[in-house]
Length: 433
Image 1 (cartoon, helix red, strand yellow):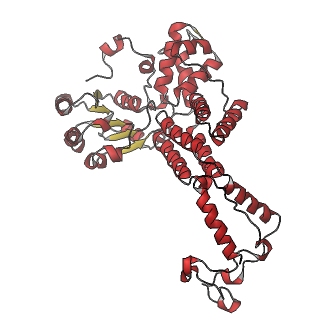
Image 2 (image 1 turned 180 degrees about the horizontal axis):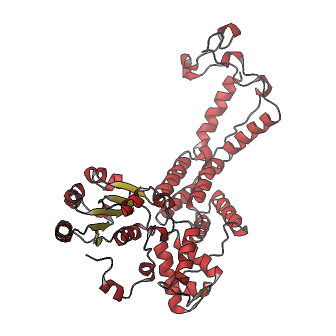
Image 3 (image 1 turned 30 degrees about the vertical axis):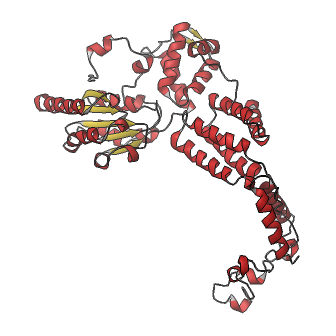
């Protein structure tokens, strides 16, 4: 449970590449630039001798454990790590007692790092409070879940919350290139082909630890690391997909057309290809939201609700878990009854406006609230629909130039069938038929 950052035993034990390549200073940390600049809380913590309590919230592999090690190493503080998966209240109290004893006897402070802190129950989190409140330790809690939902308020209010972001492709690329050339890593003893580097970046999905684990597995097979070597090491084929090239446009086109054609299996195939190739899940979610109105519309009004909810879930959760949410929306969209009446309606309306069919807003519909509007006749003769049976009253709503134009022509598919019937009757009534 306990580890000292500079212990000789740790140095002698063979360590994974991801551990060996952990940054030793804040300047070596890749990514998280919003947390590492001059004057930021992390900089102040490293430069100050005063204990501080932090929560590091972010996706896996973004550097939460690394930052805790850096803080301990740079400040020469004792480093104690507890995993919330296996530790209990007794372990927490023992770590705190040891930290107090060390502080009293030698004056050396302790960094108490709790990984997966959201897994601690209330009693376990309560056990941390005295140490945090009295600053017996520098407490750092790491979590992949929203701490506002998983951490007790007294502990959260006494700590600084820092949000870590997923690493960009460029960040992961830099992590891998550094590991290849650095003596702590492969020390230049292996070569990494550009295509293999690209494949590793795609496989990482913004997770630096994963990228280094895959690189290490490939390096065990060959010093000449090619795409084929990576595929063999990771047992994952390289998806031929260029996010800036033809594959990007071809696959997203096939994805949309498969949903439009109601082939859920084909749509899921293209979804999987995009996810595995490292396509931005937010881009996929946006396309699904557009599809829900463009190709389903009022034939299934709940389709747009699902699509928007999934887009929000992608933002909240991220990959890999969000692939389930994306699949949920894809299946809903593919199997929903189809109607393009909405997109045709707005297209026709925009087309008329661009051709100059605009006209004046009828006087009885104009704004009559400002002083002087009544003298201009604004609002005069307007009939308030709620005062009439069924909330309908016959009066002109559109400008004269487009009064007889028909934009929304609903289908009889799914839930749009009753809408079509109701709209036909309303339109006939309003037009005087």
